[in-house]
Amino acid sequence: MEFFSALAQHTFLQYALLGGLLASVGCGVMGTYVVVKRIGYLAGGIAHAVLGGMGVAYFFGAAPIVGALVAALVAALLVGWASLGREEERDAIIGALWASGMALGILFISQTPGYNVDLMSYLFGNILMISSSDLLLMAALDAVIIGATLLFARLFLAVCFDEQFALVRGVRVRLVYLFLLCLVALTVVLLVRVVGLILVIALLTLPAAIAGQLVGTVRRMMVVATVLGAVFTTSGLALAYGPDLPAGAVIVLLAGLTYLAVSVLRRRGSRSRFGLRQSGR
Image 1 (cartoon, rainbow, N blue to C red):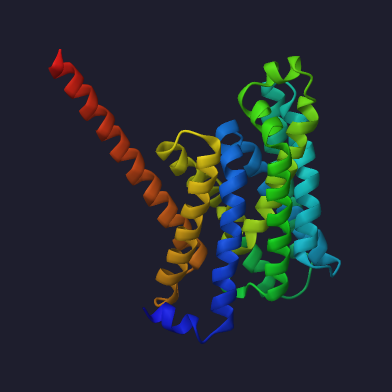
Image 2 (cartoon, rainbow, N blue to C red):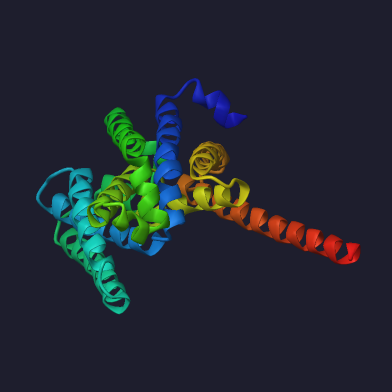
């Protein structure tokens, strides 16, 4: 209740709430594709490579978010190209990109004098530092993600579920796949302000993974995952406000505990149904 009473008085809390809701749209829509396609590892490589772009931008005096956008798109194309090769080469290239991006970011940050609080908020997340310009950027990224999903939904589903069939039907699978990874990269940048680079993959995948256990279609997964993301970000922000806890960590912890609870309940339910069928015999 302390959070909701303060919400009416403080603009930064209102921005934080709106930022969480905007981030929920991205994690709900693109997180569903990441879970269905099982490309969480690829998304992780993209997310950690973003640090390199942020470090370079910070070193040259540019906004870290600009470096994050450029690095995310470049990493998405490299990861997509690598994933089209043999499995052992793919894992090695993604691992190298993951580590190299982090190392490059650390090197450039270490050579930049001073301590930048804003940069640290991108690394570890600080939803309370979201500004009006951040909200506009997040809204624009959401619009791109939703628009692309509406226009290319059938192509994305074909690539996610049956690449061979899509090839037979004349779909340019590689191009669609690379485009999908670029949208995942934009979603990573969308979420990084909320939970930071370290926890971004958790917020990207957990709401969709929970939704996948509750509903059976991709569209419903997107809707449920978006609602869950909104619940997690709002609840995490409210719970973290009073004790002054890191909101990003609380949000991800709520999502993780919910995923574990749903998984346990589903397993118990399936065992109970199996027992009833056995006794019925």
